[in-house]
Image (cartoon, rainbow, N blue to C red; front, side):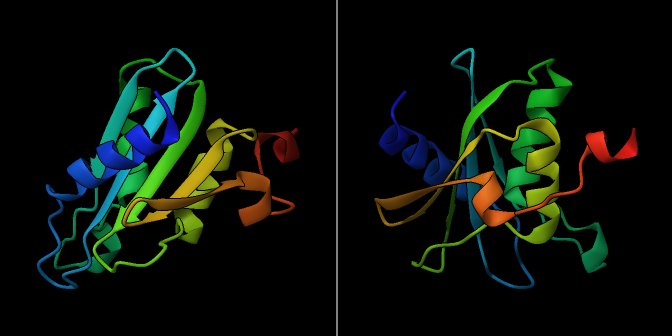
Length: 129
């Protein structure tokens, strides 16, 4: 799957967003190294601390099915602008892959970053040893 197709999957996932409070819809599509794609959308809860982002939804779905090796994750939103993973999502992403491509898109124009660019000098399991 190429990155344009992954962005398309993220837009499809965005359609399932549950965001009645912010009306800020987000979709994500995670490409594993085995070629599987896991999608996610943001799910808002009235108690905002319980809200889950699209990126974490996709990653948690993959983990729950035994997938731990990731190639790329595409992130899109209803803002019609580039939307980057929040700090919590960046921390979750780096937990599972220090070599993943982060694809941010507006419409179908996209940019690609490494997680190290978005979360330099990250705290990981290596720091706990």
